[in-house]
Image (cartoon, rainbow, N blue to C red):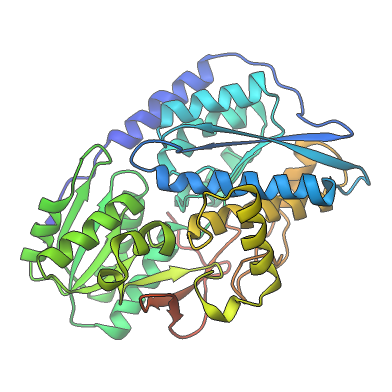
Length: 416
C-alpha cells in the first residue's frame, strides 16, 4: 500500500491562528436587542473552495425570507426579532477565518456565527469564539474533534452541523465490506478535513480486512490532480474512495473518464453535491457514484410537491437567484437557517448562553429539507454531534437513489 504522509499544512495554520486568537484582547456584547439579532457567517466566496460559498448565500436568502415575509424570528421570550445577517469571505483559510471571527465579534457584535465550511478554517477560529463565549455552530465540517466529549468540554461554544467524518468513514467501509468484499481500494483525500476521514477509514478497513492498495493526498494549492488520478488508476484499484472538495471532484471525474478508469466510486458527502460537482462534471461521467446523503434532493421528482422543497426553491430563486437549488450546499445552508430559527424560537432568554443550552438539548428535531428519518438530536453538554445518521445512495445521472434504509449511529459515533 502506498500511503503519502499526511500534510501538516492545515494543522500548522490552525495552530498559528489559535495562538493569534488568544493573544489579542477584545470586548464583545450579546449581539441582540428587543428587535434585532445579529448572525454572522464566514465562508469561501473565493478561492479553490468557493463552491461551498453557496452555503452562506443560501442562509442569506433564508434569513431575508424570514425577515421580509415572516416579520423575523419570534423567540421563546415572546419578542420577534429581525435577523441582521453578515457574511464575510475567508477562502476557507484558517487565518482569514480568524480575521472574520474578530470582525464579527469585536466590530459587528454578532450574537453567533453559523454555517461556516472547512475543518481547518473552523479550528483556526475556535479558540477565539470560545474565549469570547460566542456560539460557533452548525458548521459545515465533519471534523470529529468538534463533537467528542473532551473537545465539547474544552470548547463548549462550538458545534458541528453534519455527520462526523469518522462515522461516515465507518459507514462506507461497512458498505464496501458488504458489497465489494474482495475490492482493491484506492483512498484519496485533501489535506484539510480529509486526513481525519482517512485516518478513521484506514483503521476500520484494517479491522474489517479490507485491502487498501494505494493512498494519495493532495493540497488545495495544487492546480490539478490529474497525475494523482493517474497513479490511483495504475494501482489496479477497483473501488475508489474519494475524499475531496467539489472543484477537485469535478477534476477527478473528468480525468477518470479521459483515461477510462471505471472503479466503483464513493464520494464523501461534502464533495458529492449534484449541482456543485456531479452536474458540472457531466451526468455521463458521474453516473454510478455512491455517497451518503442527509438532505432531500431537489433533482428528485418525488420531492416536486414536498411543501418544504417548494418553499426552498421558490424563496431561493426570489432572494438569491444565482444559486442553483440542486446544489446540496445550498440545501445545507437553507437547513442550517431553519435549524437556528427553530432553536431561537425555543430559547427563552435573549442570551448566547441560553441559546447554546437549548442547542445542546435537541430531541429529534425535524428541520426542513432533512431526509425523513434524519433529525437533530443532542443529548446534553457532552454531545456535539447533532446528526449521526445518513442514507447511502447512488447517482443515476439525475438524482441519488437510496440503497437500503437510513443508517443510524445515534449515540455511537466512533472516538476520533
